[in-house]
Length: 324
Image (spheres, rainbow, N blue to C red):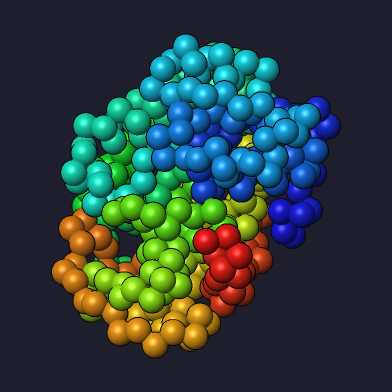
């Protein structure tokens, strides 16, 4: 069953925080296609209005420019909302090492504000973005919920704290929360710009410009790269999963494992480029290998990812070729 099989209850209203960002805008767009009423709350610190251009004039869409760090804004945005998809956060492990206080404000206090506002306004389910970074230095592959190691960055810490608040808000207050531990998500609208850009869009843009990309480390680090439509599916299914899923966190990935140097070579071949990369130092706070066990999400959410890496990367390359 893919997200296309998800039935949105008639008259449902969804709030997508961070809805002008990469994942959030894809969620908002799909929800509108499925007949939902959608609000987006975003302060545009990392999101872009152009990400919402395709649906900004939709009669069932409302954009609220505001910040999750402001509780009153969160309270206003959640009035009359059935489901919250909380994507608003700052990503990037290296940036979190540089700005730990900012990450605490946005990723912890901001998420807590959204949970509290959702509780006060009777939201049916609060689905929030967590991260594979919560596994820290635990060496065992695949990564399985309940087997976490020591955290390696402020970013990872913020996501772990969010999960604990999610558990507590379910147990103490009856707000049904579901945490989604995203692995390395990629696809349309992922920003290729800036020092903290994700690796796939960054490589594509540099190759299209005939620039030499830098690979941190030896290129033999591996990741469970996950196409955006799989993540959309997980969010929608998390909204309607059985009560047993509430208070839990789930891996969201394809369950594969790709080496960075292989991905680089795949991109070069697809774009018809022969450019030798530059090898730089390892990044602080990064884990060497990442691969997800998605059996818990399959069992409790009905998650069944449709796109493997090979099919997803072709769609992503096509989108960037048309839009960069």
